[in-house]
Amino acid sequence: MTNLQELAYALWESRGRPLGDDWADWFAAEAQLRARSTATTATPKLRFDLMADLRAIYADKLAAEGVTVDPSVNTGEVLARYFPLRHRDISNSRRRAKWSRELTVRLASLDAEKQQALAAIESLAKSGGNLNPYQSRQLVTRPGAPDSQLLEWGITHFHLGLKPDKKHPTLIEGTSDLLFVVVRSDALYLVEIFDHKAFADQQVFNIANGNWPELFAHAAWNNAVGLERPVSAQERSMLRRANINVPTLGANGTVYGSVGFGITTAGTPVAVMQQQVFPIIRQVRAFEQWCRDKPGDVLQSVPPGLLVGLTEVTVRLVETANGLLPAVDVPDGVASDPPLV
Image (cartoon, rainbow, N blue to C red):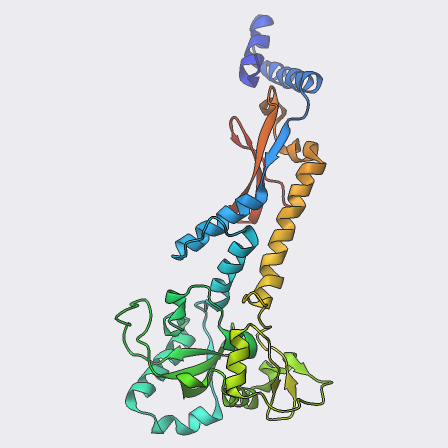
């Protein structure tokens, strides 16, 4: 007999079913089961593969975004594909709309459609509306693909359509001319309108930096004398395609590194890898080490009666409101939620 309730009832019956102190039989039953577990049962072996659990969690997240992951893709690569999606996502927060001097001066000369699109974007920014439909077509055609201009200069682009795109209705209709912007949690900086060929045109960077130098100061190489020569737009495009971070010589003579924290040689954002992917992997690996080194500590949160007779239990990784946590599976369900170490 291993069930706590059954054992407590048997003890109560053996005492003639007295009234008023049945709690004593419950505590006695707990003590017997605990002693029996200690005396006759070794610590159950832990079975776990938390890195596989981590992979499954984020593969499911990618699937929800419409991205299918091949079984051959490892855990780190799955995370490296998921978090760039979030990196490019613009949260629905109220933002001030700040216009560059250059765009302000020529606003009146723009055609009516561009003026209407700019007004709509400004309104959405101020109201906390969804700005993501104005972004690159790659959000649909190549989810998770890096935005090299964003990673290098901290600048991205919006299309200036006025209605949903016929091919990708979750996006605004694509346009040949683009609005280049800098997005922050509290502000949207409207830089200037250029055509599609301007992604590597340093004029985009110079206008943004000239209007809001504080947005770029963190990337300044203050001890650099300069570059031998400026990098052409053609060279910059080629180097970006090769996932090579390129310094920028600003119009003010200052050399800037990657404002958007740059890209790795594997094509993933440096900031995403350093701030999200690597910490999660280190955290999960540390917990796996804890399971190997101190299985008894892992099982401390499980009521002793649930482990009686078990030679093996499964520890798995689950996602909760408090983040990724380990859980011990026992016959009566999940019964453990210690934090990762």
